Image (cartoon, rainbow, N blue to C red; front, side, top):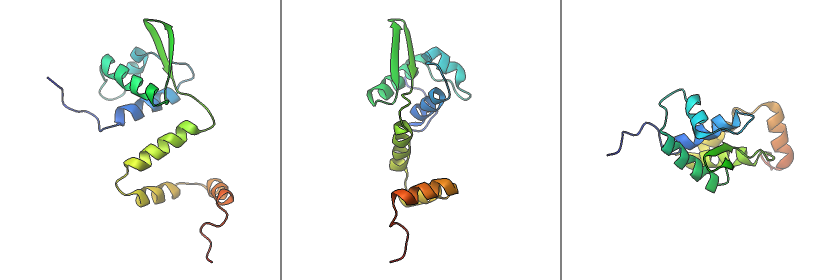
Length: 125
């Protein structure tokens, strides 16, 4: 028998990534359970989600022994943030609206950086 769905598709993975990004040290599934503010997922559910994230390259699995496994997020040069942004954009029902909403939250420095990368964009011809 299955329980009632408490989260939308992908929400658990996003929450796990958010929790792991907020930590300096790798965490076990039990430690992650303690950080949930809403419904706490079962240990086996967390392990399944963490294994899927590991296969996607979004989570690192650190085995100190067969029973002592911890997880962390890779922290390269923004690639994890990029993957998260692309994933969110891909899930948007209205891609244009999502991009415009994102752009509306950029500060002047972000806009200047994007203009330097795309110098011909947004200028009348």
